[in-house]
Image (cartoon, rainbow, N blue to C red; front, side, top):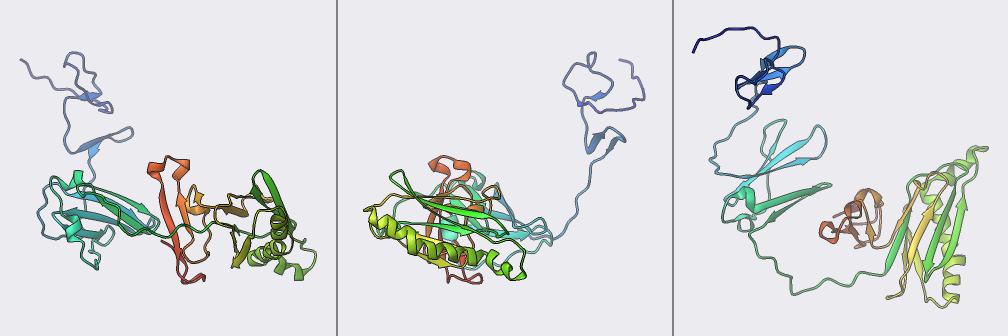
Length: 301
């Protein structure tokens, strides 16, 4: 067979599995270490840069990326009972406290034995080869609570809260003043707006609920969050609205669609389930507020 030589302007169509006679001039049978670009044609594939190195032999490890921000990313590697977490930017290995080697032990390829998901600042690592069993000690029954919080304040905005029981709505609202006087600025602070609702609940709404035969409700405020407690077994719902597309005031009882729907402050041990995008029960996870009700110590875990 004769050897032919020709010049082609582009191989932009990449590798083709067609027969030689059918393959176009912009395709190739095989390529190594090169990429096809519209402007520059065939160029060398980008090289890699070694940031750091350590000695370890892996067979088929499990990898998981932990992304805290665009500038702070880590890669988790586990196999054979060992766990490494490496900073992708610096190549430095993170210090790991505690020993979970017994939980990390597995049979078979680590890549198939583990699953991981990162929620906020917490990463859950699941060993699929472990037998899951319920603990003998059960947690206490969740208190019958709901809460609402003020995300932002503004002038001349009407905030409305409704406590719905058996289809009957018990409402209260608060309208912030205009900005005609400098002294009005204090009335659009989020904790001030929340306090107005706490006062209204205690003076009018909660007595009205009791008078309707629904038992003794109560409320308390933590910063810009107001927690409403109801008698055990009393089913109720919370609805909120405001004049800014219902974005300045949020409410929930025992579930939310995203952690973005949760307040910064709450009462100790408030429990809530998170259903991403309203997904199925298999995608649901649970959070409990722990720590003092202050911006520094309070957190969701």
